[in-house]
Image (cartoon, rainbow, N blue to C red):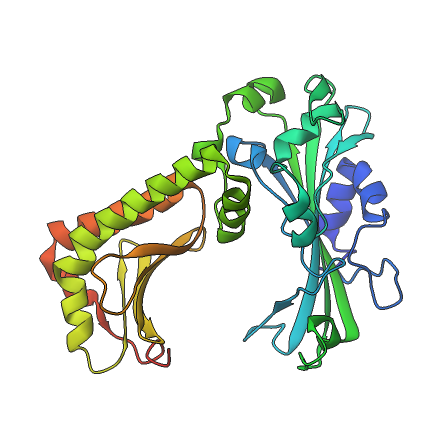
Length: 332
């Protein structure tokens, strides 16, 4: 959205602290290490439990990483991304921010994960103990995502950073989270990691390295969902349909959940996907047991994906006719 659009002007007038945050030196910058802003999106939402366990998704900040695009308006471009969280008081002043790791290398050095809940604590000592809570002083939480787009030079020979060509645009997405009815303190206390954490493969990789028991417990729940899916769906008709199919790809939609089955390098994969969450199960050649390959979403979201597909597959056998050959997937 245009920076000077009437909607943006109205929200900036309503929340004056936006101007200060827009002018802060938030990475990534433009091609001249500046704060050029091409697009601005501002939203206002109510803070919820999921927000308490959100983490920054930083890319291209001081390491060899990037986002690239196969299609869409940014096809042929690469992107750097930085995310930030600020606590704002009733006077519109920033009173705290979350010290996110700038990149995966820094995250791997931490002995614990950093979540949005950290915003409510002003002080952290050398042992990682938090003190001086800010629940009563906080009026709004502000999440900011900054993206810079560059021409993709398409050359990885000297590292991903060599793919960043001429600067094209810099965008900012600002989400203002207002205080919930129960207040920030109760929201903080009532949010729980198992039910509200957004899961992905990176967080599990770090958890394995740290031998974090809470994450290992969550992994066990995902394994149970995988077993449930393979017994009730994959080995209950889906694999047979896939093996008989001319193309090595099939897909179908089950109660708004897209199910994709395809083969990659001899491995059979099944992905359950919605706009907000997904999970992929994989079967090794000659194996009779699937495992979780990747996931994105909270545990309740992923549980819903699996349970819904299992229910539709078993309660309405005619729905299996929706599972058809998909040549777009057979390329795998």
